[in-house]
Image (cartoon, rainbow, N blue to C red; front, top):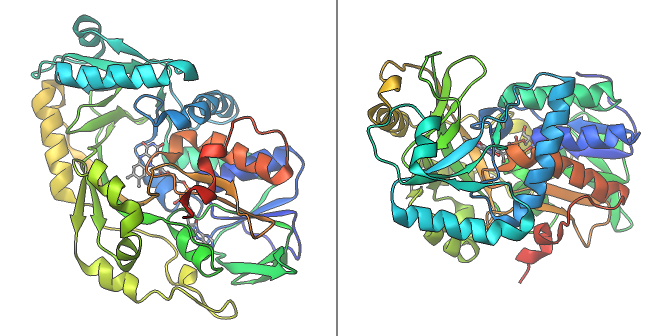
Length: 421
Ligand SMILES: Cc1cc2nc3c(=O)[nH]c(=O)nc-3n(C[C@H](O)[C@H](O)[C@H](O)COP(=O)(O)OP(=O)(O)OC[C@H]3O[C@@H](n4cnc5c(N)ncnc54)[C@H](O)[C@@H]3O)c2cc1C
């Protein structure tokens, strides 16, 4: 995907994850001269490491319009290139009547959004899942939710963008913005300057560092999350499930991707201290699923400069791909619980385990926004562990922000300014 660096483009996108490539696809299809600059490889970070869920159930209702739009776009993408998209149906299993009541509250909150989800009773659920040793009270379910294969999907969307005229430069870090007369006039890459009037930052976990170097405050932290893959197995489970202490979805290769909501760890870092007031409520809300840890990452992140010049190697070149170690203890526990619940998984063996750094905001909603104060700069980051499923719609929304076209989805809840106080 590497070509000679252009001197000028209409829109430069920083980051080749699902958000960056989806934005590139939408812009290229509008005939815009767009280029993506990726410090490592396309889908090297979160976008290839996720569970692959395309989920509306249980989502913050503010994201539901994006989620419903995304379902339509996924179907359209799959009709053009195989990205493993399948509406498998997705169920949040409820272990108790109390959990059913929680799901009823979500359905009530989501009622006016047009979300297509419902409660499943015990009998209906029994027909969907294999024989279970655990009694379930029911489930929150959407037959329209599903999965895609993360790496194939992000690379597939990138390929469609290229076929529509976008250019993608891998191994090309963007050190920062070129600013003239108070507005964006280009990007400074490790291979030189590229002039452009509009920049979209889709830098995942790196967006805070990038913004901070231009005195733009973006409250974002990283959360470590682990995942495992089993060998193909005939376990009789087609629907994607959250069982509370495990999650499981069938892969295109016949194996399963397994994890659990509690497989996430927030390391204490200098940024978590700086942002503690903004994140306190999130930590308290998520304390059941998120473990706070003090370890090496505090000192590792302390060595990363927060301000850096653009005429020498930047922190983005120093780390081409965030590739943390998986937490095998947590993963074995998740697989063990899956096996104890569904005996059809008793022969499941692990073929691969990995981890990723999820980029989170204080309200667990993304920023899909112009950056007021710096015309020409747009931010699409902070997807807080659920940006893969809505990625194609978020990318399209960013493209509409750049071109000034009427937005398909109201983006008021995703403005960067909501964090200024
Ligand atoms: C373990 C795990 C499980 C998840 N499960 C799900 C799920 O089931 N469903 C779901 O919807 N979401 C899930 N997510 C979240 C989802 O993966 C992310 O929200 C989504 O991939 C974010 O996409 P992105 O493009 O913003 O970021 P990324 O995929 O992280 O891409 C950002 C890219 O920007 C590049 N970059 C950064 N700075 C620069 C720079 N200065 N110059 C050049 N390049 C730069 C990086 O190298 C990176 O490739 C999960 C995430 C993880 C880690």
